Length: 114
Length: 112
Image 1 (tube, helix red, strand yellow):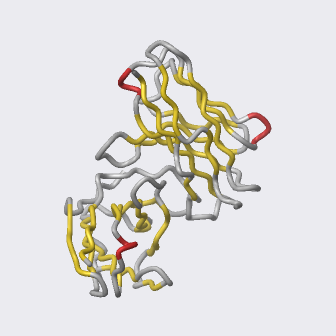
Image 2 (tube, rainbow over the protein chains, first blue to last red; image 1 turned 180 degrees about the horizontal axis):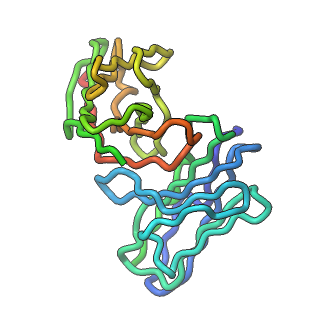
């Protein structure tokens, strides 16, 4: 399978703990995006990378959130001191060259903070 | 970003055509109209996009009004697998793939 893969698929954590999610984009895709989706809502943009550079961050991305994409390949999203409001599906997407118009999404990581 | 408006939900029967509307009255001349859909427990997937002319692909057709202020996604023969939330999104052209701004979309139910 050469699609976008995310790990883990599900994560249950206690409030106050740190969690880290991983996204492996489609090989050769230079853009990588993170989104968050709560129940009944459409996905909300969090941040995106072009290669290893983080080019845009949403106001939704508080200072407890950090994302990295070392070497422009896989990416990690870390949430520190989790809160119950962080419970959501975290989606990763990737896209190819600047002329590409289609983004490919992974299946997401569902986070539950108890 | 230009905004899109879609009905919250629609219902259709299996093997019948489905027309999903989208209004985008503030669309600019360089905005492309994209459709994505999200099946239950899946990430969104690309369906189709267009600028001015109607478009067809293996999944669906996109009909764009002459003034571009509205568009319709057409599923020619719906199957149970087409039950999903459908999102209509405008993307500024000339800037390559960009972040997607999702609304609440239309939840499509297909009756057997």
